[in-house]
Length: 341
Figure 1 (cartoon, helix red, strand yellow):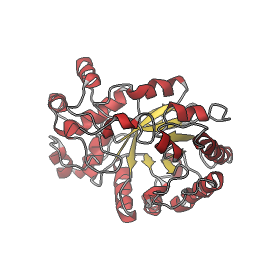
Figure 2 (cartoon, rainbow, N blue to C red; figure 1 turned 60 degrees about the vertical axis):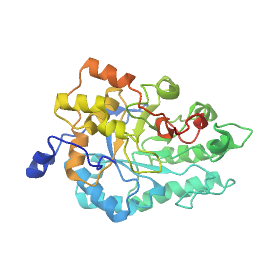
Figure 3 (tube, rainbow, N blue to C red; figure 1 turned 180 degrees about the vertical axis):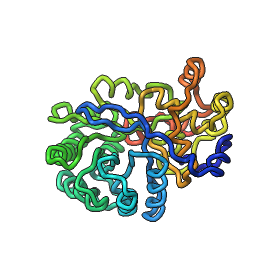
Figure 4 (cartoon, rainbow, N blue to C red; figure 1 turned 30 degrees about the horizontal axis):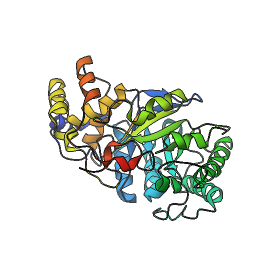
């Protein structure tokens, strides 16, 4: 969450002159089917409905046009109300949402815990997103994480039933897409083995949302290059090194020597440096804040640039300690190697 307190040389200016808060919209990246997706999204993870309403209202006001949501965030009614009350035409807002992966007993939405009803649960959950958001279609819907067997076996495979569940869920996604209820479809936290479950899909995933931030290297686990090779756009969550289950950004990103030095050189914040690095990889990102000023800062990534040497240093940077929040997917792909030290 970029609302974490951190030094920001222009924050006082934003607060003193609210009219300066509006920032030009982010550029877009083209998905495989031609849909243009903005490079920066405002997220609502861990907000209740009223907090989501306030955050989305602020994000739309400062210029965000991509909103990242999920059924299991339990706050999409607030998001939908903010969209409606904004007065911005629906066609100008890119709505992204998620359905839970199948078979997860911890699913807060209690919508996907049954291992044997994956397809029907997915159909129900896809429609529930539209109903909660109060819209007829979304611009992108993704599967939040692989089926539950992948958490146990650390990969997607047939012998555990994981691939069968992934294919059943993807069938529901394809039908939703072909019905015109989603302009694009994708996944999140999918590693190579999970994509291989869908090799024979009619419509292959267009997006894979992964943890990605400074300190992970440019191609963690080879997932960035793998996705690019299959026409999948990677989208970054936990852009400040937040753990999937916590709200704390990485101290190495917020206060580290490298990000601090680069930020000082350009008179921006360390948060902006972290987000800028992601965009320099041609990776769209999700950020989050309850503050208009912070949101304006998070969106102001294209009016300035870092040098080639700074980019190389950020590319090569490794945090002092390797931990579980430095791997792209918490759901599969050798997570056991990432032991907190």
